Image (cartoon, rainbow, N blue to C red; front, side, top):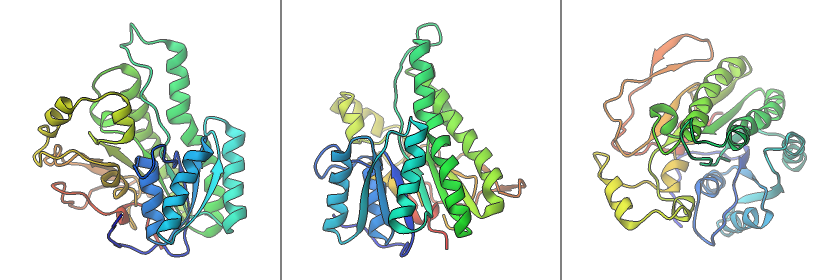
Length: 289
């Protein structure tokens, strides 16, 4: 697999949650991010509750000459998050980067129909799990004098929409949570950013039974007539200079939007211009020195 070398993360240590690869040589968001970080020099701790899936990502990284370790972790369990961060520091001596990928799309249903018990669990799964990981990552990053955190949201966290009330609610919470975290931790030179993918074709999308007709239809939603992949999303997870920013990965569907970001000093500024007719590099969000 050929990936351009756009930035240097040599010496950096990264944790990627949900980093396992559940299908041989087929990248989901987590495995794509882990592979890309390793390709650019980071030592990667692949977190997944399925150690076999994490081992498959490690195998791909090993084949490219990268460095990766597998740590089994269910990020919905606070004690396991604490242990995973401690293990990463034990393995590599520090922690520079955390990429929170883990998320789910269920339960479905409107406010009238959704199972509230499942709704509560889904919020814990999508949102609280990220808070738990950040809770333990920040002290490790603070001891380095810097850090970078990327939270995976969704375009639905910005625009709302169907098929149910849960998904947009949880992903919108991640966007605002990222804003809060950026303000809280900027004083320690820890940058916190958010990626909001649009309609990408990943193993998870395929597992939901998306048809070829639907894939063709949604390619028409954007100016580029393009359907994203896990690697497109991975390339958005790394800026050297930004904190509180959300990046849309949607093949120019939102090219005309005017966006604002809040810096760690809590002042407002317009985002620097980006070419939303294409995908930026992973260097945009985590490659801080």
